[in-house]
Length: 275
Image (cartoon, rainbow, N blue to C red; front, side):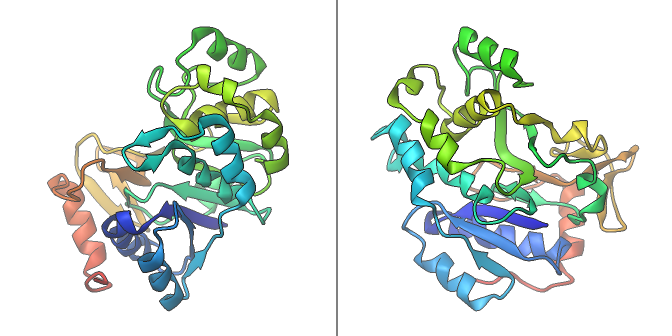
């Protein structure tokens, strides 16, 4: 099992926090790191100094896919839209099952393979949640076509967290789809729109992770939290295991008090984060 995230020096604070929490819950795992762009010097140094971290080189073919569709368009100031296609590097160079999680995520449980990967099919991709309506597939006719072809979410998927196997996304096949006209039917989320297209056109099984592991959650909606057997569970719904959640602000805190208590408990066992 491989575990991935993606970062650059601009997200260094996020990256250090992600490492701190990831290894607090998963001290025996390795973490593969994809460079979001060339601003990677500081993170590269950290990777070189920590044997648990594995650098994933960016495949130029994947860059070409994003550039073919989005050209010089920017997702936000100083961030070309095609850079987000680098998430697809998780599929390159191996044939193992893997888990990808955005770097602005908070891991809250041990990522033990058997309790949420046991049912995943070899030719499939499962996601943490659906995309926001019209963020990925804004054109109803295009969305309908893809669902007719086998896409199981009419809005597409949120790629902030997903599981699959290496090789499911084939760069050479994807390049045959890449063309600037796609931008007319794609929404604001670059890699999510292309993933939806790829899943539909090539008949890749897809769905939400909760469809194969109903107990896992990727958000905290309140209630008592209990940490036991490597898992953070919701006290009044012990069948619900919070695998990870996500924050979108620059400030990492405050978390809800219940979540802070779990994090403090785990972090106290490994000391302070690297600075």
